[in-house]
Image (cartoon, rainbow over all chains, first blue to last red):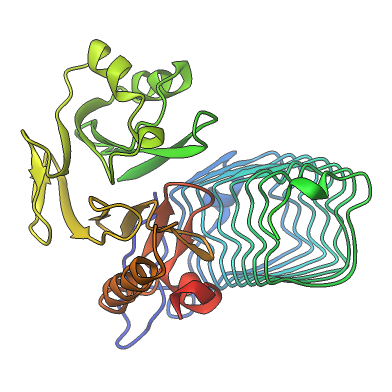
Length: 186
Length: 181
């Protein structure tokens, strides 16, 4: 599990990374190569990270912190993400196809043109997120929560939405075709 | 500290195993159901279960205890437990873990929330974007006030692990849980 150590810079509200006593803003020269080349990212702390065109596919991400980060054209295809915190992040054109995501927090995040095809996304928190032009077709969303989220031009077709929470959502051109939407909450 | 979740399809309850990587000591919270996956989790990480903490005594959160007690020597802590009672607002130290219990009531008379380092284990007091069920509206208001009081005293980044459904943070709940307003 990531540690909650704050950045040592005076009055900085961010978390220190797992590599330094400072956050990425106050110590931008941190070498992330060894972390990112490993197939296992365990207890990694990289909040406020700007991640562009990185290949994080086929990795295992466990107990890690990435809150307030930006991910642009990043591949998480076939990646397993467990018990990690991606809250208040920005995801643009990212791929999560065939991924396994369990007990993960994406609350308050913004997803634009992302795909989550044929993924297992269970017990995951998307509350308050803004999801635009995304495709989650063929995914298992069992017990995941989308409460208070805004879902625009998005496909959740052929999904298992049993016990998924869609209360207080704003839905605009959201498709649940072939999904068991009668079994969801909301 | 490492937090593992185990989901039980019996009662749809989340069971949590909190392990210490150095000492291999572990705590078990709300064993709703004991199955091979849960036992494998202890064995794979070579954990010694030092104690079981119950957030409340509803069967969906305790039914795994009977089997686990046959396999391991377990000490169970709960509010008003005759042998190992939890005393609200008094730090309990078990192995490397410091546990701070809050008595919140609401969902049940004995509902306790445990704070362990930067994580809150909520039981049925709260789930992401929702409040635990309560027998009366007045108890719901009491539960809401208790949770707001706890949340306002802690770091907003504190993690929340409910008895059912996905995890959250205090910050997310304050923003997206209208039952807390």
